[in-house]
Length: 606
Image 1 (cartoon, rainbow, N blue to C red):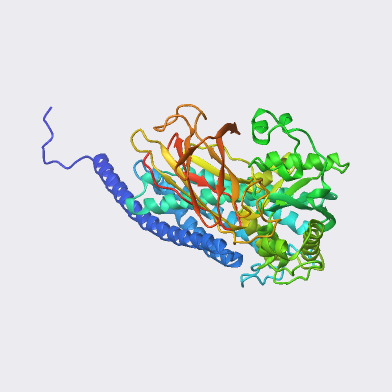
Image 2: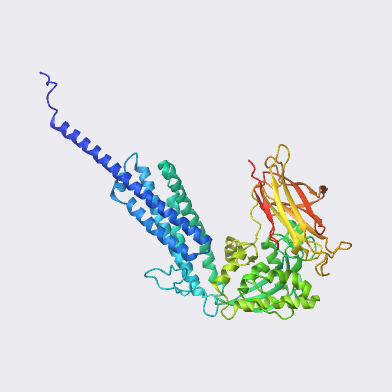
């Protein structure tokens, strides 16, 4: 059979296939260009959303709730626009292509997650908060409740009590938002920033991080708001024991437990039922030995009284002892034990100066100095002093809790004081205790992370000289065979003359020479075992003013502690150096004091 000439036209089927392939290639090219343009638009809208999200964080950090809401609404518009563009036809079609598909699928997933996180998460939560803070009038900072939204009742009633119904409704909003954010976080977490063009990777990673942080923050708030109405008496009266810590006589949780108060809470209304001094609570719960060997080493074998119930830095150990002492007096078990110091009580005074019978007037600006210094100068006699301090507590609570004096500003001030360690709380109710722990109020010893250390001080001379005490801490890195070190500088700036009640009670000691017990807690993997270049975790040796001193040692909640006494003559710096075995110190917690302590942690290579 003769062969077909080489210049003969191709058969029709081949021409049709070639045209189809050419058309398909052109369509893919157009689709890719179209998708690229859409992806750029998505990136631009996502960047706007990320910027507005940062505005939310900044506004919340400065306490501008309504400013944060305005930023969140702006971010919601940008996130919704990005989601719409990512869900447009070109990106939906191109997401099925073999090469670009995974990238475009991730882009669509991320914008959908961001839209959900902002629109169904951040905005509803901030609207709920703004309604509570603004008292339902939409005033706030100008954001209001937004179009189509009914004004909320506000957190506080006209009489200053807490509206537990409004709080319950806000909790329901936060619960729904938390569920939406959980889904958005899971979707965003599956996105791979490495698939994106280099110019977008940082924004993609920031978006994932922002969604994760927002989801976690709301997840922490969710159980707190769920438990808050019950804690405020929505389901029936609750009774609370409040003890006041005196940081002029330091203890590891903050200060000597002196004046106390009993509060009753019902339907958001708080009533002061009783107030007194620590001398009124003379009953004991049990010897510390019943707490176990670790606590026996901390407390010794003697009975646990109010004045020494917080020798452990763990408030979840101290508070049950206080509750037990309360019950041993024939009183009902408190639903919670709250410890507060003068800095924590100051916000309750608002902008009012209160006259207090039997001693100086007090205000938010003066209450710390009055309670920790002037009282000992101006009120003579233990009975008169105890009566005055009890009157202060009663006056402050009566003023703060009655006649509509409790305000959002007051609550915000208490929240700030709590974040600074001036308010601690414990409850025998496991659900409420979990909320207190999540809110950072429980005062529990955290898990001992490698490279962590804590400094705790206990007044051992019965004085009130800690009012004049300062402490600075600094670390050094391990070098060769030498372990890391933790250096403390303690200074006692007491005046030349102090009242006898303020002076040291140690026999033979000068009135203004102060003696404190220092407890250094060191954490790490396998406490007490080999861990890192410094060898065994813990304090290897201690020098005070250049001379070695002996230490007692033990463990508590898997921390290894060392304790020793330090004498602090008036007007002198006393240097303490502790050699610390284990990994380099990366985190040092210093005590809450009248004059704030500080820590300078050196950056060390692991």
